[in-house]
Length: 330
Image: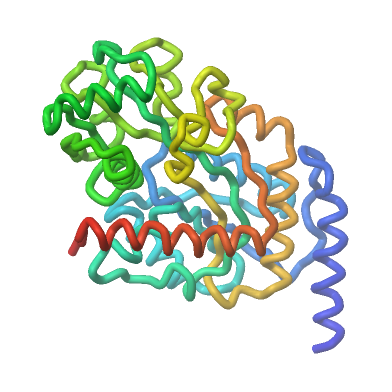
């Protein structure tokens, strides 16, 4: 048993050294793990930013481990279907999960019965990226700044509407937070997905939206919508002309959607550390960073303790808002 454990640790260390340079990772010589294909479960359809990052991760892990890595898209129920499936998977390192702020923080307070425990059922490996929300409006709205828009909304109470990707989504919750903090009363219009809401914003059927940057970056570049403010603490390299909320006098209007890598709880610590090493290598890769920038995402890197604290703060923050709104989904 002691000899096998030494072989396992040595195999992880040697493979980590071989994979230290992104793009030059070599298959692991360790024969104990992985022994078969690794599955990465994604709680969204193919084609989105979370799916893209999962597929780039899959390519990296395939090279590093010398085993197939398959991305499985399992959309539905706000991510709960995918999360529950991943939580029930064997904790042998062959199933990973792309968790989000929805599956790991918001849903716990939003759904009456959640088929998994976001904290107890998963072992966090690390944050992959986060993307701040934006205040965006249709170009026909007669305002060019956040202050002017707030003043305009106050002078038209209940007349302006904002769209979201659905009840309880981060685009909905941030919209309600924006209403509360600015003292305005825009009407929420939930859609089945971000694409439908964006289509109506571009068409002028709703006045505003609070999307994350990657969901609207193409429309911003095409001047189909106008960005008034960024829900981040600092200026974005991707959208340098959009002022951050704190600079405009709203320090508590900072929020983002994020994506992180998880394994089922009780996955061996040595496996988690090896996966964390490979994730760090991917996030440090200039190819990965540049590819994500193309779709409007700035890569975030956090230490494991920082990420754990951040996730708990997010869970507490959104729980208070959801309770104040008396929101609940069966």
